[in-house]
Length: 145
Image (tube, rainbow, N blue to C red; front, side, top):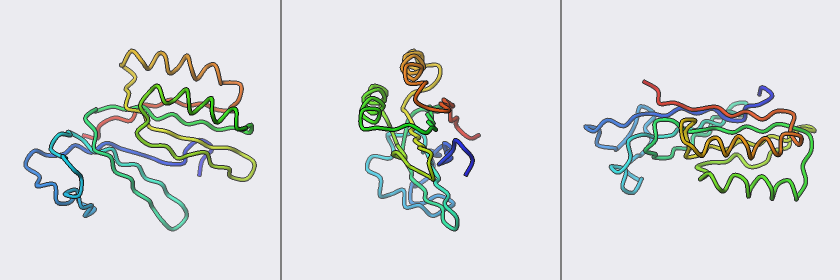
């Protein structure tokens, strides 16, 4: 694992002609309720040694934001602050807080793109907790074409 990534993700476009029964990975998409209301799938992959965990979310956006936090300090107060901060931005998925050796890792995917006005608020909010983490990354996950 590199220092700032617990997961990787991509967005897969759904074809209108698809019967939603499976993908190339044979994921049973027919189990999703109202899948026809969505344009895309957010695929989040967690790779740990000899396994890959896939988490799939139907979404309508072509771009979303991934926030990665990496650092040494963590307390109940900090966890509450981060949770409160990110709740404003509609979290799609979170890794939760992971402690690996002496470092803390956290990732979340937000139903927000860099072009959304609220993304500026996200940057401002994350700057307020910048001293807690060794590294804070914001990246946009885009539709794979």
